[in-house]
Amino acid sequence: MKKVILPLALTASFFACTNAPEKDKAATGDKQEVKSADGTSYTADASSSVTWTGTKVNGTHTGTFKLKDGSLAVKEGTLTGGSFTIDVASLSNTDLAADTSGKAKLEGHLKSPDFFDVAKYPTARFEITGVEAFKYDSTTMKDVIMKDATHTIKGNLTLKDSTKNISFPAKVTISETQVTAMADFNIDRTLWGMSYKGPNNPQDWFIRKEVNLKLNISTTKK
Image 1 (tube, rainbow, N blue to C red):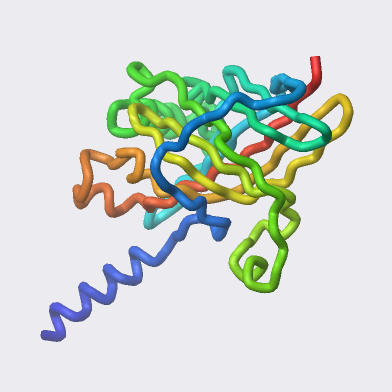
Image 2 (image 1 turned 120 degrees about the horizontal axis):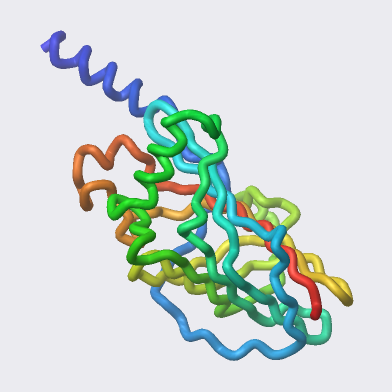
């Protein structure tokens, strides 16, 4: 019995090494209807980005995606909608040195059919389905990590051939000429069918299901 207990204890300790970033968890549900957004359109700037963090039992990797296009709509000082297209093929790792084979190998693997399959699905899409003022109360604040959130944003996130509606807190700043939106949350990649070598494969267990996404969207009225 001792010979069995010891390896199990070591395994449990190994799997507890690295966890996903402690961020707000995006509520995930079925795809929702996207309504036309009223108001003035603000076009996404080249400085806009999506940062990702993935974790495994013995480490963490971070990187970025560029935006292919995007816009936000504002009416009477209120965010009413918007959408943006993520250039998944632009995936870049940022924690490994540029001149190492490890960086190229990781990027190639993430772009392969094992994960994003960029040859078949070069872009991802997010379309806002609802925007609400973030409600601050004692119950809400206990659960939300992003304490300076101003809005709750809901939208359809399409990755590969799967679309799910997600909801997350965001900090939105609106001026006459510019709108910025920042968010920092975790999603469960397996809900979009992103499982290494298929669902329930033991090799996929070494990669955390939770992936952290940071949105830093800057838009300008044209």
